[in-house]
Length: 154
Image 1 (cartoon, one colour):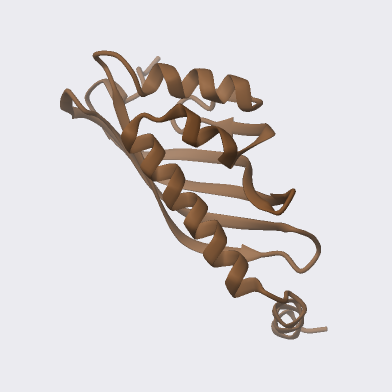
Image 2: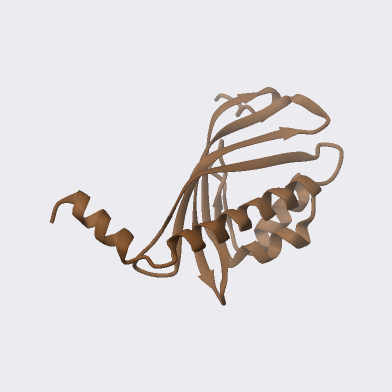
């Protein structure tokens, strides 16, 4: 089977891919709005209980919804409040199961000091759990940065 035929068959066997993609984009937009508002309660239902996050510059692994919400609480409150936006460029819904892969670009900055920023690319795995698309894992890479968001060189 040629790769082109394989992908054509996979697309044909993924019913509702367009609807699912729209639902994931809606969830991502809600996540971005919650981050912008610093609303941890609105982030929580978008994360799977066992969600994994690998940060962009130092590859810190954050395991589980509770750990992520604690990290977001730290980032989204206080004098060094940060803001993050993810921009999905591609979402592919799996024909194998209720899961999808999102790839895109991200940017983060400190609201009180615009010189502190980072941006890059990400990949997110989504899974439909109890009828709702939730983030199961996200991995980020920082491709550019400024100020205190740049990792210290050793």
